[in-house]
Length: 584
Image 1: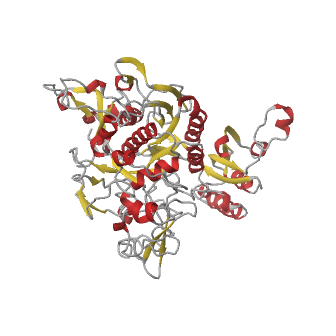
Image 2 (image 1 turned 60 degrees about the horizontal axis):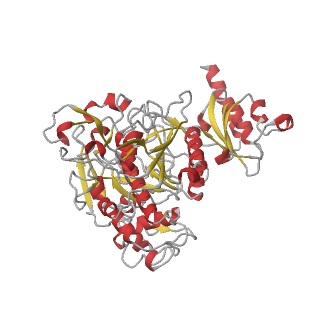
Image 3 (image 1 turned 180 degrees about the vertical axis):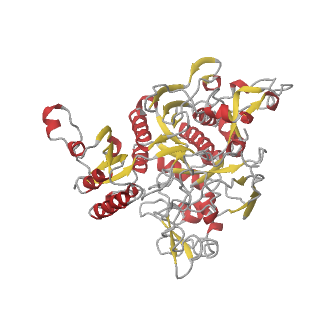
């Protein structure tokens, strides 16, 4: 015990001399001698190329080696490296002037049909928009070989490129079962369920799109920041080769710092600014009772540039007017930065899509294998070898990626900001005020309010997006939500470059719906006069914005709160052990 106390005292004294602003909060908790895999970001212009004798002798990275560290690889997308250092080495490195930020190489996990009619995909198909010519980079657990991803009846795959970034595993095949399901929601053409013998056809939103398979999740559905960043970098480099216009990220992890420092967020911003629309799952933590699910959006969905997607329940019907929010769908605002998220919602609950036989999810959830009699006329109760059911914001993100592919086939000149703005403005906005669902396993009832932090700008509507001729001029960065303690209200504050920092066509009221704002206060965003409806009640001083809530010392990132060891990347990764069964 004395030895342990001595070590902890040494750490405390040592950390006092560190530049804490350069070390992520989670890293500060490690003992001085414990080795940690980290992402080190360097200042722009810092030379990280150590080739040749002269380069090696004067290499910036030598400082890591001198501190007893090991360099595992470079991350040019964020001008950084992934390395292993102990606590003392991290402290010493943080004091170097060319080091911008050091964060843990954090683990990520996936955030786990009636989807097509719910977003009016039929209109796109009837107009011959199927995502043809557009490639979606699917950064996930891999993609299994499946007939629904062929070019029609010809056994030529529309998965045009495959690469694994999983350490020690060069196979891009799907050993987890998540990526294949997402691929089907994006681009499956329903070949295995099309014909007179079938009662249902399971078709993705962009059945003509190509898939670039970049595998980052292992057989357990786990990955790390550095692996995902490397895959994003590859997607950017392949953009012109395959016409990659969309990246789908149906995964996430806890938020530890501002998006301005988070290496994962910086990577998705690079992709966005290179001309690729980035679609990210909001997360499946909406049942976090301490805040009624508010403030639970994961990274990189917390980045204001990307399209962040929440999950809706289709209620098993093709019409959308009975659809409800899934209680597990994460809500904004984001931790630390207070960004208003999600941006839109889409079907994500109990969706049937492609199966990856013998994958982890296939073996762990046999009840999710779709029986033949569910879609084959006169079929048996035996399990299909083609289709599987999953639920989560992961699935909702896949649906939106398909929507984006169709839209970009129709309007290829739209840039990412214009795509995001179009989807948000044309989103369907007719929702109930509240809805409730009771978990049959626990008896707990979850009540959701259909506010801006729950449904964003509304339910994605592909027909409306294709029919619109509005083209935004400016960025589509999601606004910041600010709490005014004097009035008890929450206000939206737009970036000065944002398209909705205007009145008329792209005003806050037009994009998010006038019902989201207190009457007469949504005319502008910069004067603090656009109070959100309900903010003086649900999000008032004693709720989300109080000193011990979103920003306080006992905030969501506490060890016993939302981001505990079994929260996002543990056994409950797909919002709980009943995740695969979905929410009724």
